[in-house]
Amino acid sequence: MKRHKLLPLSETMHLILLALREPLHGYAIMQKIEEMSSGNVRIAAGTLYGALDNLVKQDWIEPYPSEDPRRKIYLITPHGLGILEIEKKRLEEMIRLY
Image (tube, rainbow, N blue to C red):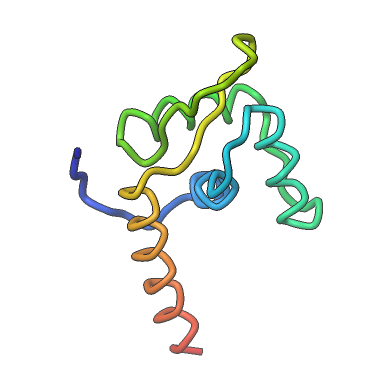
């Protein structure tokens, strides 16, 4: 498992990790993020696929078996879930300051 210095997650990375708590392919990830954000966030395909590659390299998500070879499906890893938990605690601390 690769360890990197954890900086605050970008909104894009955060939403992708949240979306991938269930197995999804690229277009479904974009739809899920738009749904989760009530239409306020739309991720372009180029941005999404660059982020997915980065998240795989960091071991935060991984390819998930698919019956359709044309679609790459991804799922968050246990390490990625840990990153989300750290980020959740960081955000809760920030909110407490208000």
